[in-house]
Image 1: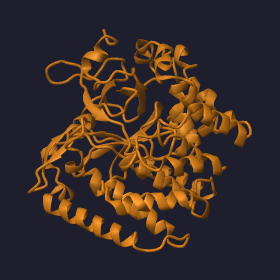
Image 2: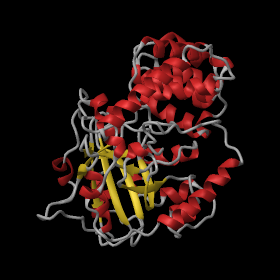
Image 3: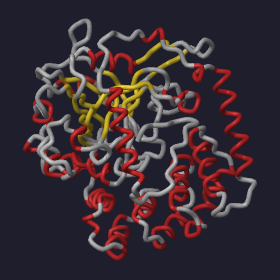
Length: 438
C-alpha cells in the first residue's frame, strides 16, 4: 500500500469486503484520468522543497508524537477508544518510540484481542514486530489458538520465527475450511511449506522475464530485491522497443530502491513488504502526504484494486478478474512460479495503494541501520531523497532520476515487475543484473 509513512494514518475500519470498495474503484478511475499522461519535461530535483524535511519541523513533529502517544496510553483501553489507541500505536511505530508505555500498550491490546476490533489488534502486532520483536510471544500464541479471523491469524503467524511452522500448518487445516481457496491462507501455506533455498532453486530463468515483452508498446520497470528485504534492491527500465534506458555516459540506468515495510511482514499482508509479481503503471502524481515529499511518484496498481481494463491498459479479454489473464502476462516458464502471483493474491486480499515514491522522512531513526539512508514504508518501493535540514531544498533525489528516466521512454503506460533474485545477504547491485542483460 501507499507508504503513507509519518503522520498519515491509513484507516482500516474493516478487513471484510463491503460495498464501499466500489467507491474506491470510482476514485481510481477519476485518479487515472487526471494522472495517466506523463509530461515529458525534465524535472530538476534542486527546485524541490519540503518544509516537512527541515530540522525544526521534524523535531516539533517528533515531540508532538511522543506527547500525544503518552497521553493516550494513560487512558483505560476499551472498544470505545480502541481506534485512538490504534492511532497512537501507529505514531509509536512511525517515530520509533520504544518506551515502556508503548510496550505495555501492545501487550494490553494483544491480551484483550477478543474484545477489540480486529484491525486494532493487527496494528498492535505490526507495531510490536517493528519495535519489540522479542516480546509478547505468549500473547501471540494465544491469538493463534483463539482467533478464527484469517487476517489476524496470518499476522500472528508472522510475528516471530520462533513460532513453529508445523504448528501453524496444523492450525490452518483445523480452523479453516478449504484454506487453499483464500488468498491469504494460500500464501501463508506456501510460505511455511517452502524454504528459502527451495524457493530460489525452483526460480525460473531471469533472462526469460527480462526478455519478455509483456504487452506491446509498454515500458517495463524491473525492481530486483533479495529475499531479506533489509537489503536495498535495484530498479532498471526497459523501453517499448526492448532496449534499456541508459544514463548520460551510456551505462544501463539503475537506481537503488527499498521495499521493506516497517514490520517486515510478507507482501500478501496489509502493510507488508512490496509483494512480488506484476503491477500496472497507470500514471504519476504528487502525493499530498508530506513525509513522501514533493517529488513525483510512479502510480502503480495491483490486481483487484482497479478494473481489468485499467490494469491491462484496455487489452483485457474479460471484464472480471481471473488468474488466467494475469498468468498470460508472464513468460511461459514463469507461469507456474508461485511467488510471481503474490501481487495478484495481495490484491485479492484487499491490499491497495502500493506506489514508487521518494521520502522526506526523518533519517535520525535509521542512522544505525544497514540500509541507511533508505527508509521503510507501509509497503511501497521507496527511493533515496536527501534534504537540506535548514532550507528544506532537495540535495539528492533518486526518485526524480527514476521519473525522468521513465519519461525518456516516450510511454505513459506499462508494468512494474518485482522479483526476488535470491537469498544473498547483500544489496542488489548493477553487477548482479548485468549477467542477465548481455
